[in-house]
Length: 331
Image (cartoon, rainbow, N blue to C red):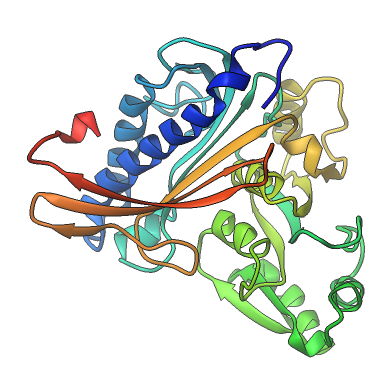
């Protein structure tokens, strides 16, 4: 990453990438103590506390812009909270446990997720729904469009990939609101992969080579949309989004967080995640993207992905942790 506002960041960004992995590892290992116990709030709380503690060792002056909610709703990692041990000014987007239900039920694809960019480069999105569409890299710019029908998008994507539509797979959350999307996708001839939760992982899966997903579409959380945009930036994919409002108060809140902009505008990838971006995620339960935490007495093995938009490098990191020599608090 290069920066005029943070001249030291160019030197430290490689180290920061590894520091971010330690943060998501800490959250994942703490959350994994609750895997399969049916207590999603306890799992989320453990992840939040561990992630917040781990941030104290990271050499940044960070501000949480996507987090656990407003200050009066969340004791830690709330929007506006300052984190880090001091350093360059950075925006922080976090989901300490994406897929709390997945963790509680020991189902696939629970992750701990965070992204980092220089201050002012992440969309400040309220906790509402966002319509999203994601495809991978090495495709013509604008090959899909949020305002086009899903059949038109599938047709253009198949042409760009030199495939038949029947060879394409669309991934979406299994929700009643997506029934028409699913029906139209199948009607067009494509396959559908449905997820119970976890649209950040699904967005990443749509961008990875040799993956099982060609396109991700539908609506999910706006905070998760910003995190997905950070990941998509790192792998040079394409993404569009639009905030979906239920009432005037949500519109007011969006205007307050992103002043001077039309809150209902179609968002491009760079509207959601600008500049140079770092992204890290660690698996809590095993899914198509990452393996979950494996425990053996005082030892644990973690599996993480870390990405940098500057280089487009994607690294999978396996960590072996010995808790006879370090404590949970020193992860």
